[in-house]
Amino acid sequence: MSAGGPNYWVFRDGRRTVAGTELVARLADELLGLESGNPSAVTAALISAGELECALADTASPDAALAGSITDLLAARLVNNGNENPSDNLLSLLPRLRVPERARLSPPEGFAYYALHPRDYAAVVARLPASTFAAVIGIRSIGTTLSAVVAAALAAQHTWAERISVRPAGDPYDRVTSFTDEQKRWIATQRARRAEFVVVDEGPGLSGSSFLSVGEALVSAGVPRTSITFLCSRQPDPRALVARDAAARWAGFRVLCAGEKTCLPPDTVDVSAGQWRRLWFRDPAAQPASWTHMERMKLLSTDGRWLYKFQGLGRYGAEVRERDRLLGDAGFGVAPAEDYAGFARYPVLSFEPLSRRDLSREMIRWIAEYCAFRATAFPGSGEREPLEEVVRCNVRTLFGAEIELPEDALGSANPVLVDGRMLPHEWVRSGDGVKKIDASTHGDDHFFPGPTDIAWDLAGAIIEWQMDNEVEAALLAEFRRAGGDDVRGRLPAYLLAYSVFRAAYCRMAAHAMRGSQEHDPLIAAAQHYEIAARRWLGHFAAAETVRLAG
Image (tube, rainbow, N blue to C red; front, side, top):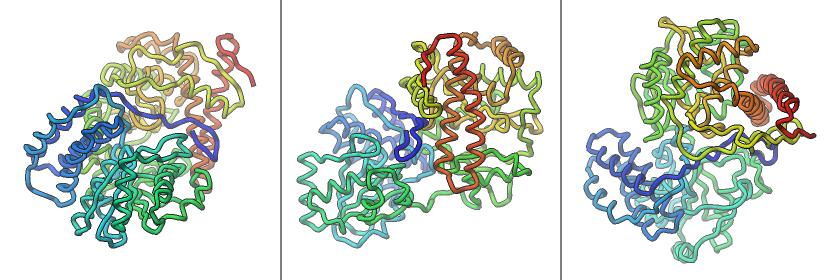
């Protein structure tokens, strides 16, 4: 949800519950992978080590420090470009770790979605105030890994650096940081050394409250404001942060931004933030609206032959690339040729984005077969998202109405990593037929719905292609012929959920993009989805299967 703006709910939590032994086994595999000499293997192992350390720290495990030593050694190897192979030594530490039976993990959004490389933080350390001692505080989750990198980079420039990590709590827009007694003693020791304190995290997000809560907790513990630096991934406009009195509070701290990307594919130009549209949409009026802040980074080779898209570091990128490979093998997509530091490389094909005018019997069958393929090829896992609650919140914000859906109306016995992007222009016609692009990254990103019923994508196709009842019936029949089940009974709830979510998404995007050329097209898109949402609200009200008031 958004504070200080429209109260739309479009971001999902994304946390997963995993077995502690799974975290250790994954790290062990990646430590063995260091023998390959592949630079990405160090990054993958570092990210997994940081996740394991974070999971132990969140449970106040006494073994968090031991896990942290593994993270530190991998961070040092990354920073120093070491050629030594420490995998045997590090592997010997793993059996000593007592891990919780279950652990909660949040995806490290920068590593998974936003082309943030740990080296970016190492590169900015030289701009920190010179000091003999440095006290580095990582904000969990991703700040755990980043704090290790910053400490390693400080050590490389002969600064004595020590680190801890903290987990701010409370309202997302008004976080509070409370130090343990042990951390308070550590802070007192660092303060006595006149250390520089460096607070490390990605972001800040919409509010900035996590950074602010840690900075102000340090001040309350006696650390001078002038000795505190926020090290973040972007330089925000403090006036746009929506935490309480954010602008005034933010101005009280020194801020450094690790905004320079240090690990990009060579000989490329940036076509992110909607710039890619000019390559394939000759008519500006045909270019789709975009929440450009939330796009994955895209690069074009200087010879125009290759498009690089960020898919994620470590296992996050590996999972996306495997989905890409399966889609390519099945003939639905274009498999990438290779990857570079989390970027997948695709050939730049000569193709034509489709439009609603291209909806034919053949296209209906192709969409149905694609959905049937996803329903079996990409089973979802993890905890179910509260989609009914999301619909209620967004209906209330969009229409001022209260709605109560039937119990478990948006449940699924077989959750799927859905495509989530069924708009006509996401289908292209190339020399070897129609392909689905942008098909591998949205099923498990930080927006709703997360893993859910394949009815979400069928509803998306119906709404985006503006199918009438006859075409909708043909799509569902083709879906069943392709091996799918009969979704007719549960489809209306998903048509409502999809249209309400997309309306809320576009409204929130327009709010974020106000003052830019994206604003008006996003408002127009929101209005289109609101028409569909009103239709399905009316359907449920007429059937008296929901309580609708307002």
